[in-house]
Image 1 (cartoon, rainbow, N blue to C red):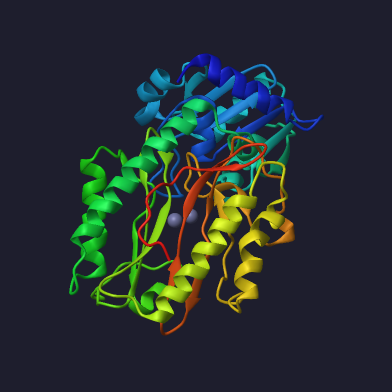
Image 2: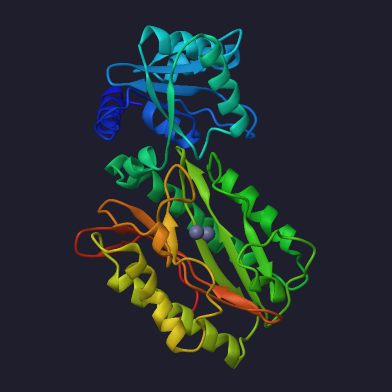
Length: 370
Ligand code: ZN
Ligand code: ZN
């Protein structure tokens, strides 16, 4: 990563420090990558590839021997420190030297156990540090994408769309959901995705009434909806795409549900723009589905931000406690759905780039015109 980019991100972050705050401890993997350029990813919650300590003047990456070389290479604008005894001891030493008294930490990402250990080490070093949980600070910075980030997301989405078009050609009655999911995974990787943004969802027949479903042994059948939700990861950035397909001729019910979802999505995409309140954005599709009598059948948010994480800020949620103002340069999904237990569901998910006066639909692939 260019050092100038990291420096401008760090400076934007420091502008968001609370007045009394001396430093921020960054534990979120995508936040760490965004600020430092260090691309390592944790495989589980109980291990860390490293934490960042950002003060008003300096920026450190604390990691262990396994990641040292890698971190030094990528995080060129950070002072990379290796801890050998424990992260807590090294952190305590730093906080002491830097005279940090008020330390923000990411309550969303630092586990309770990690917090306990670090706080104990700091207290045992005789320091009096005020630990203050902060939420969403780096995430808010990540909302506005640079042209380079938009380009990476476009590449990830194009690759995802090409793969879906290919896989759609191969769908046949009798194939299991897991077989289709593997076909998606294999082709995404062969086409050059560095990985998956998330494990593909293939939900057929009655399983498509579950917005999230783990592909299993259920076999595709003619006349039943098949929801495919998938995304590639390219240069760290994710794509997120859902289409609902059907094998053989669709019946009236499927066409009706499909066209309601499609119209709701179109309506939302036409009305969406930066500066809008997230609840109002969600309502664009929710009101249309509600008016058609399917309000209850659309039980999730209209969409979410996509970037280094497949689900990130902002949330296009109907809930007041998550309300936010949408920003220009954000990339969000628009994914209305109708889910009917016992029958199945239809979801259509596009990605859009928000401008001041409109939403630019990035997703191109379409299957049906109803
Ligand atoms: Zn999504
Ligand atoms: Zn999705």
